Amino acid sequence: MRLVFVRHAETYANVEYRFQGQTPPPAFGLSPTGWEQAAALRGRFDSEGFAPTNFYCSPLQRCLDTASAMAGLWAVEPVKWDDLMEIGMGIVEGLTLDEARRQYPGLDLEERGTSSIPGAEPLRERRERGERVVQTVLRDHDDDAVVLMVSHGGILKHVLSALLGTPRYWGIDVGNTAIFDFQIDSTRWGEGGGALMNSRLWRINRFNDASHL
Image (cartoon, one colour):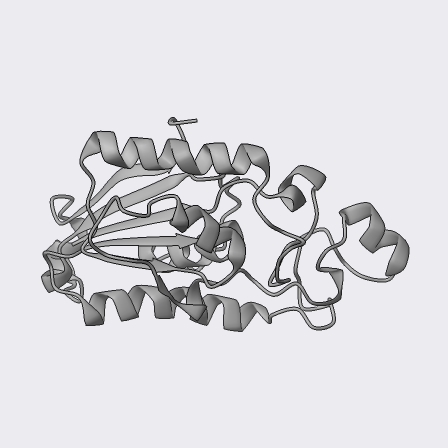
C-alpha cells in the first residue's frame, strides 16, 4: 500500500501568520502564490505519472482548493473526510500570535494549541484522530491501493506520529504542498517480531518534500 499525504497550498492566513484552525472561508482562502503552488503540485504528480486509486481531502476550503488543482488529472475525485480537518484552535482562530497575546494575556500560546485555550481541540482527541486516519485507511483499502490525502500541517503531524508508531508529537515545519510518501505492506502491518525490523515492508519515499516549488 502506498500512502501519500499532502499539506494544502499557501493561504492568506499563512502569509499573515494567523492561527487558522477550522475557521471557514473566505478568511483563509489560497493566496495567489498558493494557487501557483497547487499548480506546481499538479505538474509534479503529472510528470511522475502518479495516479491514486483513492483520494481524500479535508473539507476545509484551503484543502478543497488545493485538491481542485488536480481536476481532470485522475479518474478519482476527492472525497471529503472530516478526520483530515485541521486542529481546532478555539478562541484564537483568525488571530496572529501578537493579537492573541493582547486579547488573551493569560493564555499559554507557546505550543499553539494547548488545552489552556478555550474551545481548542483537546490534545487527546487530536491524537485519537491521527490514529483513526491511519487505522481507517488500513482497514478500508487493500495492499494494492494508492491513497492520497490532502490535509493540514497540524493534524498531519499527529497522523505521522501514529503511522511511525511514536507517542511524541514531533515539531516539523510542514511546507505548503509538501509531500509525505510511504510504502507499507498492509497485510503485515499488525505483525510483531522480525516484521517490525524488516525495512522491505516499510519505506519512506519522501518526507516533507516540496521540491516542486
